[in-house]
Image (cartoon, rainbow, N blue to C red; front, side, top):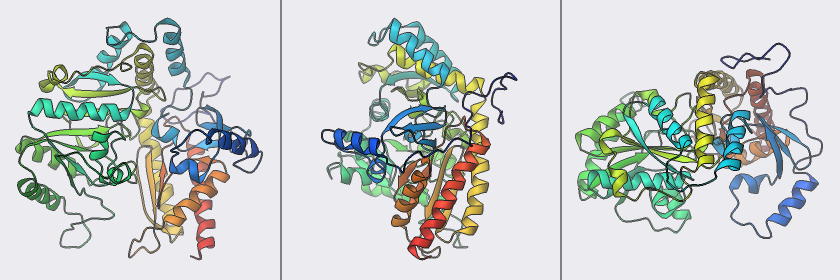
Amino acid sequence: MTTLNAPTPPPTTKYWAHVDLAKVPHMRVPAPGPRSRELHARCTKHFRGLSGQVKLFPVAFDSGHGCVLVDADGNKYIDFSSGIYVTTLGHCHPKVSEAVAKYAHRLMNAHDFTTEIKTRLCEKLAEVLPGDLTSFQFYDAGTAAVEAGMRVLRAASGKNELISCFYDFHGKTYGAVSLAEIRSAVYGRVRAPGMHMVPRPNPYRPHWTKSDGVTIDTDKYLEFYAEYIDRATVNDVAGFVLEPIQGWGGSVMPPDDFFPKLRAFCDERKILFMADEVLTSWARTGKWLACEHWNVVPDVVSIGKGFGNGFPVTCVAVRERWKESFEKISASSSYGGNPMACAAALASTEVIEEENLLERSTHLGELALKRMKRMMNEHKIIGDVRAKGCLMGIELVADRATKEPLNRAGELVYQKAFQKGLAWIPAGHILRMSPPVVMEDECLMKGLDIIDEAIGETEKELGF
């Protein structure tokens, strides 16, 4: 079977990530099964701080290939999470796995000394990234890249304060947590000084609308930002940091005029603009960077998750005019840019080009949105659906008029779909989906059918 914009395989072979839907999903035992429960019990005697998705469905995974995950009991799942937005190219993509294995045998680490593979990666990034984003530094985690980006903003501007947005997520270290109000409450309740938060446009839940009461009024947000800066800061704002599309906040897409206007706003006030694209980059939304959807080039951008397709490698990219800022912040790190990491990132980048996966991601998003809109017409508890490439979300509400979040429904749908063979991501009342961009159309539709069925069962159980 071939798919739109995927490589055409020889007549006697199948596309490497093909899923035989007659065999997947396949639940050998009710999940989580006995082996999963045993491993989970043994592990959690020592391992603490599990994510919400694991607490809701404590399955133990054993292997993965392409768009399929296999648990410790032999159950096979369609993967709609990509390891929480990470394995964008599918589990164990042959080219990426081979690239990592090569350097695992050849050279694992050389600190920040130059290697050929790092040189080739830098040259490729300068080629594919928009505008003059041509200077880079590499790290081993998204949080580390965000922290480095924050230091770049301060070094480049000579200023200190930072502005971020409610419900964005930027990481779990102190500085990154201080950019995110919800997470700062979870991780210690004290935000770093000089960190300010403002609302961002959410088309489904707007703060300000135009006279029709429906159309979001982006200009009102910018007016609020200007007034906030004048009244609540000491006019020492180094940068504005935000996710182009919210991930943890619920796959929330901005109105199309927001980022062009925000870019102009920052330029007018001599504030640098940083896009945290750890989640949204490298084909996840159908572009290298999500900001490209709005023809905006950030001054600083953090890249991660799918950048190495599962190998821990992230990047900070900076525009040409600010490149010397890297020299001012002691930018290097012990693991950043090691040969295995660079090999994974370069291979992932080449795969996206060779398999036309930017186009593939866009196609899957359009296909999913059509299907989710039909689901919305059939289910009362669906308040909103959205998709940009393979970044998708369904918002569940108790009432479409009041838009009251329906968290219990989110938990039930997540668990019911998982039991049917769909591995994915919960977020309270919002169902988040991030399938690998190599997924075939039929597999995507099968996953959405499972969700559709789970929503129907949940409505009945909750009395809708």
